[in-house]
Length: 144
Image (cartoon, rainbow, N blue to C red; front, side):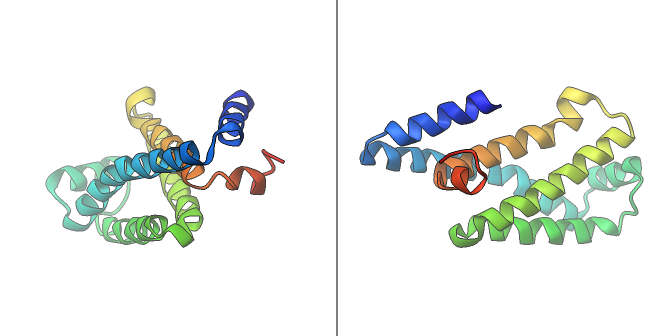
């Protein structure tokens, strides 16, 4: 992990201003690619098609809680989409995705495709955010 962060840090520091903006554009593109997965989840939670009802039952949640989950996810996603509050939104989304991992682990869902999908999505989301806002590496103490 430190090697990845170090590589990202060096590439951002050594890049001329024009390339820096391309990296930020890449971060925006990554963030835009992550959003449809989360929007799909929001729509499913709020409309409750049979697949969501079955999934909620399989995970041991009351079906009515899908509305609460959908609203919480929608709020976190909206906060993430606003550049000024993106970090707060990313923290909220990370918590939401952590809950998804825990719920899938509890029922012993397949590890690589079900349980860890939320981890993959969260990592890609944070990579996009770090490319958009490289100063976050300083705040996290990963860069001087």
